Image (cartoon, rainbow, N blue to C red; front, side, top):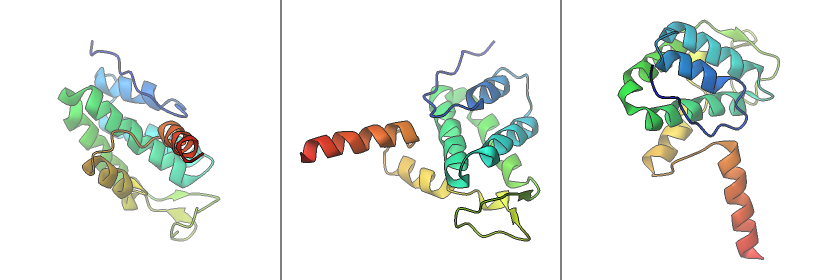
Length: 138
């Protein structure tokens, strides 16, 4: 059995469990992709939903680097999922009322942040950074 992932997710919404099943070999990348995409689309906003999913995948890659190939396979599977109907577009382009997951919403932002040396881009950490910055200004 693979070591348990110890991710700092806000909100978790089941992402850690889904990724743990992938790492343990109990869920193939396609099923993992479908589960993560479903969680992302059900979030209050698409930006936060997909942003939290990408953050979970990046945290899992840092926590269990020996499983990065599986995580890349999940990203490829997400990009190949069919368009999904959504109620709110959060400013993202829709095609016939559907979000195209092949666009990989907000993934580029997180990749840039990782490349620039930021270690976490989850809402919890961003909120904590904002509070620290506000306290320093006062």
